[in-house]
Image (cartoon, rainbow, N blue to C red):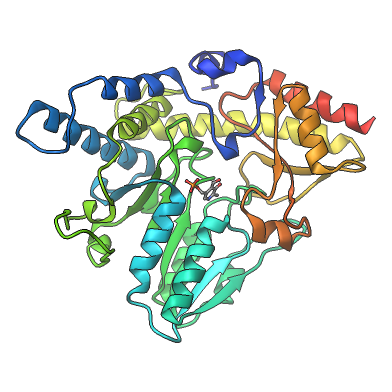
Length: 399
Ligand SMILES: Cc1ncc(COP(=O)(O)O)c(C=O)c1O
């Protein structure tokens, strides 16, 4: 099945502004059904979760439906779905809670391929616990990161390995199940940053085998919220700081304060939207997987066109060439700063910003410093016309 990109685009009010949005890796546009679900929830009688009044029941249903939706999106137990302000917040919170059990001499492994949200919280937690940090690099030319790169930093003192499902800077998709296997062999837990992977591929938390997985619905058509998943029995063993009267159940124990019900209703609508992108299967999980496979094919085709067009100009340098990757191009144009390229493209209504995008270690590692380069990411709503416009605008600079 092909993705009906015209139908997909018609679901997004924002796309009527005529801008070609290649900044999906920073945050996607939002379909009307998601915005409507949020507005509806705010205009419905709703109070705090409970089971006495109808308003309390509505709040409870909204939360349980959102956990169920994430369970279908990520193939995880709904009882292990935690909502947070953002992935960064979720990671900081969990790192502090896990580090309560770390001792001096324990080790934590982080990688230079990762967004800083999957590095800095672990560094701080390790420092506070007296644990040692071990760094995993990656190939500076191809941007590949192998399981052997990770294995080289493991020891019987490793407590946690923080890896990315996909690099938001270079698109690299490391072999996460292999990393998990290697980490588990030495008794370490694995925290996967799935923020950049989840918009581009079907994800199965169960098949990844990881202990924790985090993502951000605003990267895949949803509202601004963070999601952390773990196995409920494993979450039971973790004790974050909490208020005295707040629930000590899992997953509520990890959710500080009152949940944003309208945002959670948006999460459910987001998963339903993804499920209906390109599938008519009956179960929502099956529809998600089928739709995401169709999305992968659509994005791959446009990405290859984009790469081909960019690489035709001798003046464009494409950074990284990992074999398994998301449709995320990072490039520089000779004779122009990346900021100039970004502004030039914006002047043509082509949104493809320049930065390190918080993957600052990766950007420094490959010699792009703190400024990074221009990033163009394909989304399900990207079409051939968008790619043509990006290439034409870049060509104007390279002629
Ligand atoms: C790969 C990756 N990880 C983590 C984050 C941080 O996500 P959040 O904004 O939800 O904290 C981002 C945001 O750009 C990202 O791209």
